[in-house]
Length: 297
Figure 1 (cartoon, rainbow, N blue to C red):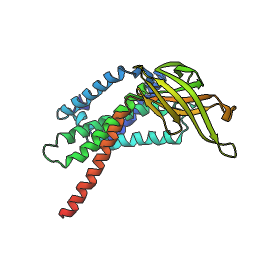
Figure 2: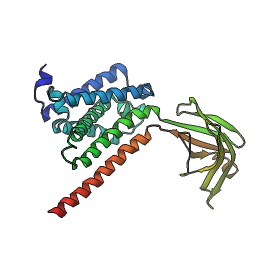
Figure 3: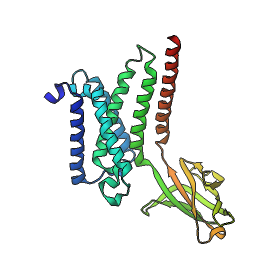
Figure 4: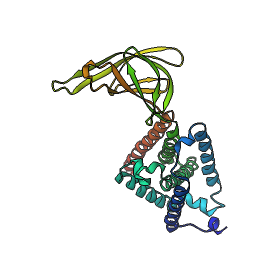
C-alpha cells in the first residue's frame, strides 16, 4: 500500500493528527467517553505488553515501512507535540467539570487520548533509536535517559490511573472501620482495620483550625498493628495505602469526636517516579557533558 511505502513528511504529520482527532470525535459520538475503569489490572498489564510489542515491532520494521520510519522521525515528533499541546492548552483553559460536556473532562475525550497515544509511540521509537546507538557513543546516555524516562512516565501514568484509588473513610472515636467510600458513594473494602482512639483539634484565637490530628491503630493484612498520629501533611503509609488527615466534624469543632481520612493507593506511582528520575538524570548528564565540551574547547 502507498501509505506504507511513500516518504511521509512534516505536512503529513499535521494531516495525520487531524485524522486522529476526527476519528476520536466519531468514537466519542458512537461509544461515549473513555472509561478508564475498564483497563484496571490485569487489563492494563496486557495493554502494556501489547503497546511495548507494537513500538518494538514498528522500530524493527522501520526500514521496510515508510510509515513506521516516519513515526520515529522529527516529521512526526513536531506535529504530535503540536496537536497534543493544543489539546492540553484547551484542557487548561476549560474548567474540568464532567457535567460541562466533552471538553469538561479532557482525559476521557477520545481525540485527546488518541493524540496522547500517538505522541507516546513517537517518544518510544525515538528512545529505541538512541538506545541502538549506545554502542557507538556514550554521549547517547543522556538522550536515552530523557526519552526513555518520558516514555515510562507517559505509559505508566496513563495505564496506572485505572488502578489508582482515592477514598474517604469516616471514623468516630472508639470505632473500627475497614471500608471507605469512593467519590460517587460506592463502598470499598480497603483490607485494613482502622480504629480511631482520639481526635484532637487546636484553634487560633479567632477560631480558625490550627492543627487537627487523629490517633489511630491500623491493623494491616498481615495482622500487624500500627499505632500512629495522622495529621495534615503527615500521612501514614501502610500496605500500599497513604492515609491523610482530610476533615472533621466542623459543627462540633474542638469537641468533635469524628475524623475523615483520605485513603490513596497508586501502585504504578513508583514507576512514574522512576521515569521522572530518569529524565532528571538525563538533564543533569546533559549539563555535565556540555561543561566537558566547553572545557575541551
